[in-house]
Image (cartoon, rainbow, N blue to C red; front, top):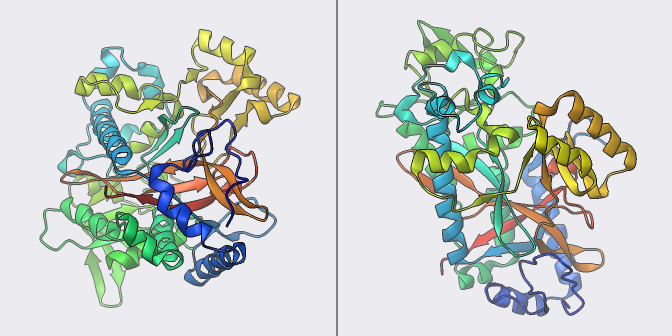
Length: 475
């Protein structure tokens, strides 16, 4: 495979320097692909695609008239992260999760950070994701955010930035796990030779974390899914199978005497811990959204009574808000008295007059995001948008400024990606997964999402993005 014509461009490339030299941690991989013919690379890619389908690694795309069932395209060129770089990311992520957990506990209890004016009171208390039934809540072991997927990007200089926090029910970890199994077949010797850290023990670590939340010696654990039509159903069933726990939906569960039971062929069996993959307000129609058909009536009362643990805790969605994200560096300083190890992307809050004026004036150069949207929806990428789109978003911001933030258009780093024209750079982000049980554990791998369309910055699977296996090196 010839890489001499590979074009780095103006972005930071993970494999090649600006001068076209291969970075040290990719040198062995470069030797491997130079010995591999383009035909062989195409065959490996074809095999990877077929294996994904055989494994059932599909997801549903809503509002797509091309059909809903798709694979998350796995590119066979991995993203490789050197050991020291990963240690820096690990330290920054642990710091951030610790501060966010303290923030959630504070805003639902003493509200000191609001009273001290560090975070605007109205931003939190008026948020639709601030759940009043959770006021005064003390979750088991004091942990709110048990499973987190934090999105990072790199700018032109190669510096990492936190793009957003996902603390409700982050998805994608099953693709990280299964992708590794597929890519192992393409490069079996190279993975061992380079000393790539394993990710296969994630289900074991997840199970131990869930068990930690219960005081019972052998707690009964379930994964609560919205059902087969949910976009991440493959992941729900996969994780339940890997952990050896029950996969349940709302109709499988009932609450009696503030205890949660699973209906089985042998009768009722009490469940002690739920890993919920349902948004906060859909968990219990009695406590939250009365129209929810996905949740379990009475689940929240059982939770408050201490008869069941739920991961992530109800109420964590307020910290997913993109406007709240802008205040995380201040949270780190407030709760930990530390400077952030990993910086946020500079963020303009349209709710603030000065920031709003700047955004309206410079919308052509900015990325505008709806504060509560996800999956690449509710977003404007200014430099790539039309004049009509600019006008539309200006009006939306003026009508509801609290609902929007804006950020500079980061280039996003690139990784060589196999295309019909050979290896070409495609933009990527990085989603590491963090488990918070008796300790904060950053899994030494991540879901690297890649924008498969040339020049695109949108990596979301629902918007046509793909993925790469992420190799974190031992040394």
